Amino acid sequence: MNQSFNTLRRIWHQLLVDPFLWPIVLGYVILLLAACAPASGLWAGIALVLVDLAFMWVLLMAILFMTSRHGHPRYLTRILTPNFYSVRLLPGRWTIYQRRVAKQKELPDCKTLLKDLVAEQNRLPAALEPGRYKTLTHDTVLHRLRRMQNARDIVVKPAYMSDMKSICAAMTGKRCKKCKEPCPFLAQRETPRQFYLVTFEIV
Image 1 (cartoon, rainbow, N blue to C red):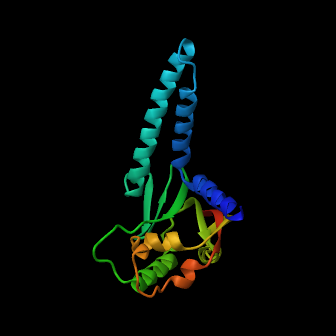
Image 2 (cartoon, rainbow, N blue to C red; image 1 turned 30 degrees about the vertical axis):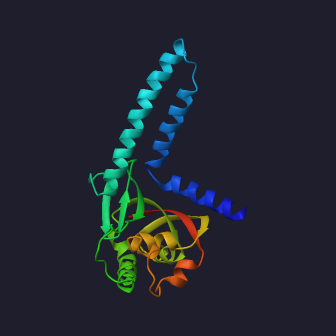
Image 3 (cartoon, helix red, strand yellow; image 1 turned 60 degrees about the vertical axis):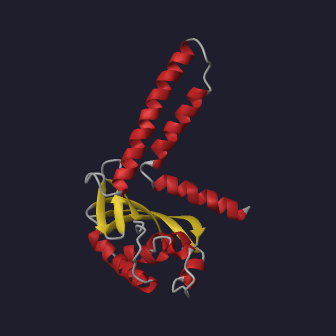
């Protein structure tokens, strides 16, 4: 039960930080309500209009969702480092994400990938342009954020407990699922960590 509750908390907080999932979910809710409307009379006409509008809304949000994660258009996405980017839907509010490594036949070894990721985490604060940000992160990044002199109004709320398996999978192009070599991430990957919902402003 506790594990299930923690999973629900993780899904809930991922919805909170994603600028596109909430609008997409809203569109599906409207579609569901319209489908439950009476099949005749005035309500049938209203339901048909709602279905059309909701379908176009979901399609638009899905297109924005995909294009922003590929780095276009500029006003929706900021590429911060090779593995980190930020996305916004509302003016002045950015959400920070870790990019997923594309599947390639030839990727650097895991130790190199880990070293590169740690180096990027150190460079990330300097890559943040002025503005308000929101992200889900763990203690390592949070401590670094609190040491930044240009970070203001830092609000931290415990979100959920999670291991680092998904982060390692994203970083290695899902190599972890088929890898049979000794894993340099094993201790970090298997140990549950506290994640936080963090909002802050860069001035």
